[in-house]
Length: 327
Picture (cartoon, rainbow, N blue to C red):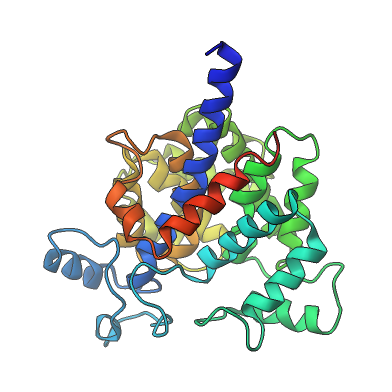
């Protein structure tokens, strides 16, 4: 195998692990998603040998503490609405060989709309997007919102177009399917740049630093503070960033977790223990750490977690199809 073939194989592996990492991290966070009380999460961890990934959804975990039990219709191993959105983008790109906005919008309606294939919690941007598509408001179909749905599709877009000069245009188009908001666009491009860098073979922390440096000042300050903080406990740092669904909260906390984690498992577990919108942050953390590590390595995606993912065989097939779409 020559150097070019080795480089292509490494890129394909990184792309596959990026997609799998995001989906696995999302599913791992389902059971404690939107539980804001970090002490309650710590108590639950003690009952599960210190682990919080793939805890079955249980409404009693949310009793008398800040939080919202959103996933009564989901079961352990399933994806949240963020993961389902990413999987929808993966399937759409794999089917058409590109990100086609019109085809994706139709698939989005058939998945999340009335009578669609998805059963579960529908967030505000998704509801607004469905309403716009139904009413043929398509260019764009998104709503003015700065929350995590903006970045849910981006691992698929970056994997497909990582070597394309039009990557930023593709990122913006994907974001505006659900979110028409400058802050969402800016944070989305930060994530895309960091992920593109890691897929190209660079380490996580330099990729985060460069993406933060290139961001608008109001974003750069938050991300740089997260990367340079002397506080190494990300659960504690969540008190500074806050833990809710807005990208200005989720992205800095995700950067802090990535900076202070040495394995995929540690990053995902820490993210869940940090509470709040852990699933929204999971797409960022899982994609970046997955892209950087091998499944076979000790710091990569645990095989047992992949096996815990509902529909794992089909998901693996879909991710393998997509990873070569830009070749």
